[in-house]
Image 1: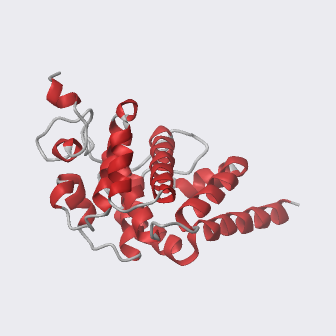
Image 2: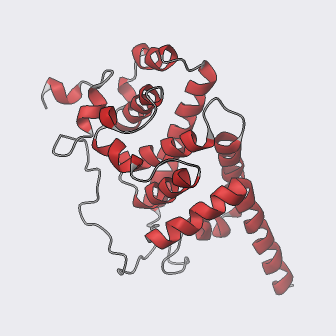
Length: 230
């Protein structure tokens, strides 16, 4: 590989994201999943067309703490707005070509006021995308952290701080990035996907009740199952 393909210094990531440019992997699936095509999860015990909620129901011991962390990080106090944190989640998921997480969190970001088409524009060319200029250093940072984590430098963090963000904002952006790199791999590793209709349903749920609301729904469902089996 040429040196230009390895250089991910400030500003270089945007050239990676342009159509036709080299990436470590494609932004879009090489074999796109049709909305009519049956989606079979990799865990045989899950229902056909399983979504992430089905995984959480099957494994409540790990789902509970994971949803608590989502709620604290994505809905708790932060210099980054809820819309900006959901935007980061969707952007990272898009870079990872995670159809499910990108779809859910794009719809959720839009429910909090991010303009439709912003994520598509960001993945095509961060430099010209219609987002606040202050957000672009953060998005470059999380993009590089997603694609080439071992190549992060002090300069990447400095660019965020010099854009006017404080250390809490940098921490929260990195944490959202890390969380969704985990979630993308959980989803892809278990064969979870959904259609755009479901993305809208999920976004309405997350906009209305947050991740704490989702955890409450799971707890209530678990209690009903316990009562019915006793």
